[in-house]
Image 1 (spheres, one colour):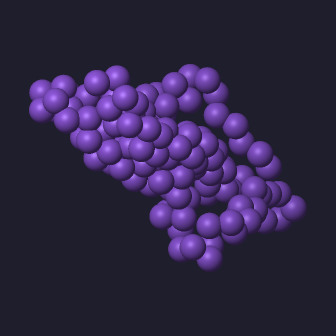
Image 2: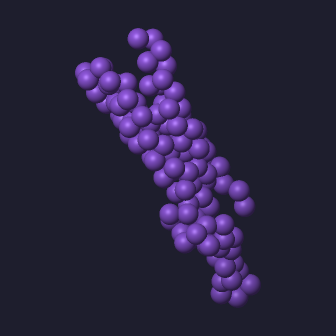
Image 3: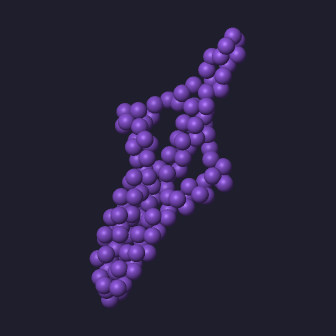
Length: 129
């Protein structure tokens, strides 16, 4: 069973994910401007990279590393007689994995962006001066 997130659910998650690194970027730019030292972008980029890596590995942090790709629990469970019961734990885990996938997708790009900010931005600002 594949679970996808509805757009209404994705937007708050994306805001939650992107808020801290954007704050770090703004604070980094402010400190770099105030101190006139573009080297602060290396610090901000490293922090953004660490935040991105945390999101990228979210599922592994939720589980033990050897269980992060374990199959989902069964969707239905045997019930009384010939009936079946819906296994809500399976639905919850499926939804949580969809969230994990979104976190991982954004985390990969955030990690790349943090590396670029930390390495290229100080160099480029240095070229301009």
